[in-house]
Image 1 (cartoon, rainbow, N blue to C red):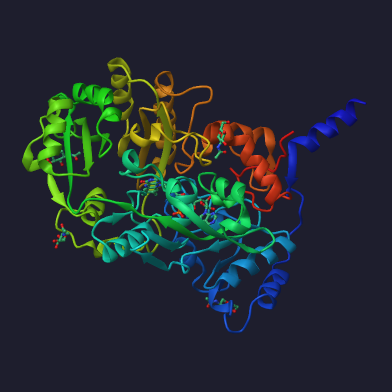
Image 2: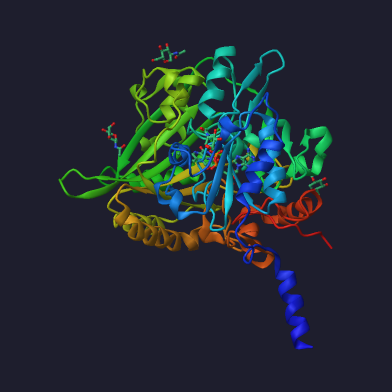
Length: 529
Ligand SMILES: Cc1cc2nc3c(=O)[nH]c(=O)nc-3n(C[C@H](O)[C@H](O)[C@H](O)COP(=O)(O)OP(=O)(O)OC[C@H]3O[C@@H](n4cnc5c(N)ncnc54)[C@H](O)[C@@H]3O)c2cc1C
Ligand SMILES: *[C@@H]1O[C@H](CO)[C@@H](O)[C@H](O)[C@H]1NC(C)=O
Ligand SMILES: *[C@@H]1O[C@H](CO)[C@@H](O)[C@H](O)[C@H]1NC(C)=O
Ligand SMILES: *[C@@H]1O[C@H](CO)[C@@H](O)[C@H](O)[C@H]1NC(C)=O
Ligand SMILES: *[C@@H]1O[C@H](CO)[C@@H](O)[C@H](O)[C@H]1NC(C)=O
């Protein structure tokens, strides 16, 4: 009796397990790909196997984190860098019939490499060749394919209009596929919300290799891919976006105050006001480890980045009224077009040609990084801030904590409007970030990042301690590559998705009941009871 109960328990816990699957039939998989594609759109140009001299370069060119960029550390069978929709469909059919897992990669910016690593045999479906963008100015819409990067999207929008924009991320090399499905945000968040608040249609290849749009997929799947992460549900081919209006001239600044310059007090006061400022102003604070005045001495430089939908004069008024402690000067402020703000925010000097937005990463990543996230609902007291500084000063390479203020429309949009749940009541989202070049420093950095996260615990959300999907962090829970354990999934699912978790599992059960689209942090198929 006990044994039966135990077996039942296991069956419930482990929905799908590949652990015992023998070596997959790679030959059959490749044969299947050829038979499923037509000579007009040959798959040979898109296919890379370990025998190809360009296999490794094809692998690393869209890996962003050196921690995971060695293909030898994974069980990679092939890369399909799809050049046509039929290549995507064939990859899904053939991987499924040969019981091979896939990882879907668009921009390759996943913080934990989950779009290009696995410990069971797998194929990478790489979308970077599918990257066309069309902008329809009169209807204020754009279609963007998954493999486009944000810099390309921003450039196309700016070429078509001086007063349209799209509210998404700050890094121009992020891919549309992962970024938008994970609920991407950027410096227009307080005025316009997230990427997913402006997605009006999508094209997706489902588990049966059918191409669906919003009308044919239905509202529940369309809800899930807006913030739930695309990779649990299918392969996003493209998004239809609603563009938003911006003035011809915006104002930006980037200033900092070190601890010696009273940075702690400015930072404390900043926390009290940032989420209550007019929604046209996004003021990010980013305490960063920096060199002190004396050589060999470290300090914290509390950086402030502003994006304001208005003039420098008006911005000065707002800052002087709400945060005079910053001591902002008019000459710190730059008035420029929206497209020029995107290079400013990526730390290019003012005057840099915007053609840099089209630079795609090539070659292996030079640095390793680790990131973690938190949501803050009440200001962090000064004693807490000082504890942060103390841990940050232990690092010997780049480390920062980035506060992204909420408020504005984020307080107005219900938590279940899309799958992205972190809305009302947050003062900030924090990102903790460390970057290092020397692989020997990995252990120390991962340890210090854990310490920073422990230091933060009393001051951030709890039960659950919320986390942001696009800031992927396997420490918040994960499954082995080849299995989906529901109890384990609940651990990361509750943090990423809060009250939307059950509904996401339900949608998953409806559209991918056999759990083909699975990975270390995917959503398990579990019917609501
Ligand atoms: C330098 C840097 C700056 C960043 N800045 C921001 C920011 O300002 N705002 C923000 O919100 N985020 C930001 N991010 C995080 C970024 O949004 C996420 O890493 C995002 O998932 C990246 O998307 P991608 O397509 O480039 O990544 P990928 O690694 O290709 O994919 C990420 C995830 O999405 C899945 N996926 C990718 N393409 C598809 C597809 N076509 N269909 C289905 N699933 C797919 C992958 O399988 C994986 O699970 C930043 C990341 C970096 C490295
Ligand atoms: C990789 O090698 C295979 C087998 O030799 C070949 O069919 C394919 O065209 C090669 N791919 C590329 C991109 O050259
Ligand atoms: C802080 O600002 C000063 C003056 O603008 C600048 O020289 C310095 O590089 C900045 N420090 C950091 C860490 O950004
Ligand atoms: C944007 O920046 C470029 C490069 O400095 C400059 O030539 C251009 O005039 C700027 N445009 C606007 C509208 O600010
Ligand atoms: C969100 O929840 C509310 C209250 O339960 C419900 O009325 C509404 O239909 C839900 N919205 C969506 C988009 O599911």
